[in-house]
Length: 148
Image 1 (cartoon, rainbow, N blue to C red):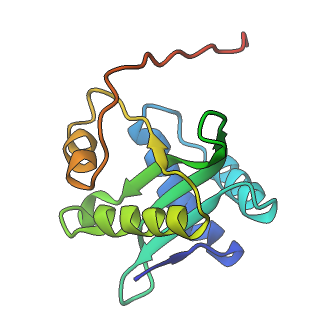
Image 2: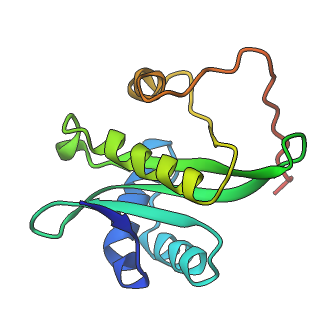
């Protein structure tokens, strides 16, 4: 079942979120993950959907942030995070989470979903076109990082 994450989900969700970060070569930090997710939910800064099995175990999540498209003059959702636990992959959970994200986009009268993934993410780069996403080959993506 896919549903919107609640504040009461933060402890279990943080474990998934921490595994997601480790997948992207970040140092694991469960406490920081809990605080980060708690702040996003409490401050209504993102929408998180979780997929749970019949035993109420969280198997995956998707996190979306609202942004805006100036040229379209509409809301746009950034699908920033999508993760399914390794032992739960291959069961269509990612597709269910993406379907829920699309439902959010439609229900909030946004113009769509935007996402980024690494070129090396073979699973994601196969999944996204299968779920209706189109690779934008006409734009360059740039990033500037604050000096630390």
